[in-house]
Length: 427
Image (cartoon, rainbow, N blue to C red; front, side, top):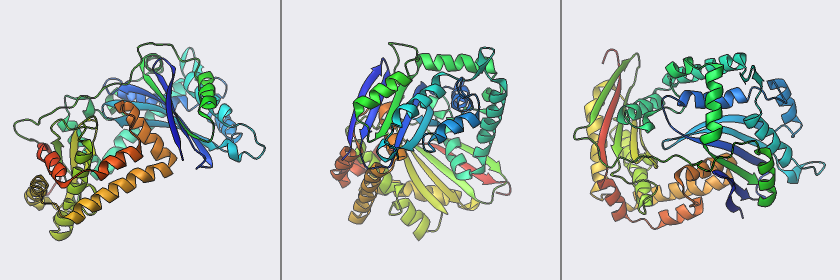
């Protein structure tokens, strides 16, 4: 059994420990939580990659690799994520659990120390970030931003949220945009880094066999250079209750062979903070979240209107996003049928096998989180960003109680807000 606990190490700096003997490796992450903002997103996303290039003690990748090799080949990687309207940047580390060290030595402490060194003791030149490292990682980040267009399915969903949340922080991409990244200098990046260290809420996560008190001591020492700030907090998330009077329609033309139709729905204010959230979660699954869903079984399989059709829930923002791949001339038919399937859920036309199949899929996914350290870390980071303490097991238990009527009631609050269509040049 795992024991999960959370404590505050410094003001606004929180440590969550999952004490377990289940894994041969330990997992450790440090994440800074900042509000998503078009002006700062690119710099925030760049900082972990530049920090990972070298520290004051280990000034280049080669010496950092040597330090990791001494920890039985551990790994520390930059991480940039988006949770609601919070940009989460930092490092995730994996290393051999102490219980499996050949000579019985402690690995947690030197691993925590190296993680703290990466975050707080960067390699500098003339009092700011190294120009070469900054330029190199800027180019890499711009390449990543540009490459997003290559996966048209993901790109269509990204464009949908940009159009849907044009005046909301959620519309900002976790990597920022090319224009702002291009303008970053080592000096300006250093200023942003200092502001992030001063202001951001900090979430630390540990999963492994070490006792929580020992973990807390190791991380307190490793992060003792963090600026003290009594007002550190995790950002909030604005949930818009209603859609506009008419759906926003956005079309884009590219040289593609398959159309991408994406629909964005507001949930009527339903989000992860509401008591009836499990009903919304199961509603999304019945509508389009599994291979037993109405979108998959009817729009894709029975009617062959889509190459794929699925729905995902943005739980903190209160959005349901539908993604589909279609023939260009099937736009109207596919859109009408997707909306018709939602109407069926709203009317409660849900077969027992649809409801139970979706329920079992969701509960299975919840429980399998416990078998994967990185997924478990990502789950708890999402909970921290939302200010929630519910465990995967507790959420699974709530899913067990959801009725067909509650699923229909959740669906009845969904309103179409935005339609995005990516079509080919000949369409």
